[in-house]
Every structure is written in structure tokens, then in C-alpha cells.
Image (cartoon, helix red, strand yellow):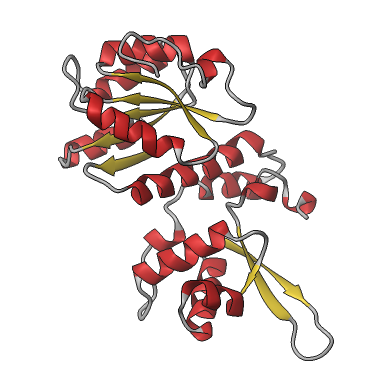
Amino acid sequence: MTGTSGTPDATGTGAGAARGAIGVLVVDDDFMVARVHRAFVERVEPFRVVGVAGTGEEALGAVGELRPDLVLLDLYLPDVFGLDVIPRLRAAGHDCDVMVISAAREADAVRGAVRHGVVDYLLKPFEFEDLRVRLERYAVQRGRLLGTVVRSQADVDRVLAGVAPTAAAQVLPKGMSVETAELVERTLREADGTLSASECAALTGVSRVSARRYLEYFHTVGAADVSLRYGVAGRPERRYRFRGAVTGLALPPAARP
């Protein structure tokens, strides 16, 4: 484990992380909180904690030494306000992404974080699922940004769409609930391949009609792709794939399976 001294983690990028892993630096002055955050991160693939820092200065040194892909940054650090660390990282030439994890609920703090280009902002205290969803969304966005090939405005729009809130977090049509939307979205995200409305209903416990409505909504807002499967008789079956799925996301549309 990396302590406040900045020693590289034996499993992290500082010592040669597994190919494809996303290295994470946890920055929090409370070592017990940092330990919990580390444990949470290690439960989400393909993330690997490469180090832990307890102050802003230690964070700056650790980023330079360990070269993480993502920094989980607390704002209430003992030596400097967390947001002030970000411009210093940029001035030093570090392009790691930053996700704020803080108890700071002030609007100024949130606005400042947005201005500094953070990829997300998670309020303490939180549960594992809250962080898991955000890490998975970040992994999808990162894959899209790293793998995209810009040939047209449509390619640019597709990349920019990837940094918008999840479909479940957007304003839903009347009669649809955020809880059910998040359930259906998570089920679609975790599916191995495509899902039909009937399969989604069986996995979530909602009715087939409701599952179809939410899946169609995700398709409408661009969060899901639809394909048709033709059977022996009757109408073709509509099957849905989460657009952020790792397979095919970084490929241009024509190259997707």
C-alpha cells in the first residue's frame, strides 16, 4: 500500500500495473477513510489503487512518481484546499483525471470543481454502489475518449455525449421513476451482449411493458443501441445494448460487431 510517503504500490502502475488497468491515487487526510475508499476501488474492474496521499503536497508528489490515470481527491486537506491542487497538477504537466470525493456541499465548491474539469463529484458519506457507478461511467468515458477516431462531426458529438450524465440521471418522462430507470440501466450495462424486453423484465422484476418502455427511452436519448433479431415467424425481436459497453465502444459504428 502506498502511504503518505508516496511509495509505489506493488500492484499499481508505479510498479508495472496489469495491462489495461486504470491506476487510481486516493487522496484523503483520514487514513481510515482512505482505506475504505481504497477497498471500494479495488472491487471495481479494471481499477487498481496505485497509492494513497494525505495532503495536497503529498498528492502532487505521488502523481509525479506514480502517474495515476485518476485521482480521487478530497477537498478538505490539512495543507491546501483540494481544488487548488488541480491547477498545480496541470502546471506540472500531469494530465490525470480528477474525481472529487468530499463532504463539501457548498455551491461554490461544486462550481469550482466543474470549472477545473473534474470528471465527477461524489458527496461523503456514500455507499460502495455510489462510487461503483461513477467509476464504471468514468471507465466508459475514458475508453471512448482514448479510442475514438474523429472523421466527422458525428464522431465529435458521440464523444461529447459520453461525458453527459447517465440517462437515468436526466429528466425522465412523466410516469417513469429514477429508481426503476437506474435498475434497468444497470441491468443493461451489466448484460453480456444484448437484452430483449422480456429478458430485462425477468432480470429486474419489472413488467415486460415497463422494461420495454425504459429500454426504448434509453434508445431515444442515445444511451442504448437497438438491433432486430428475426425468428421463424412473427415480428422481429428488438434487442438492446448499452452504448457504454466495453466491447465495441471505442470503435467507429461501422466496425462494431
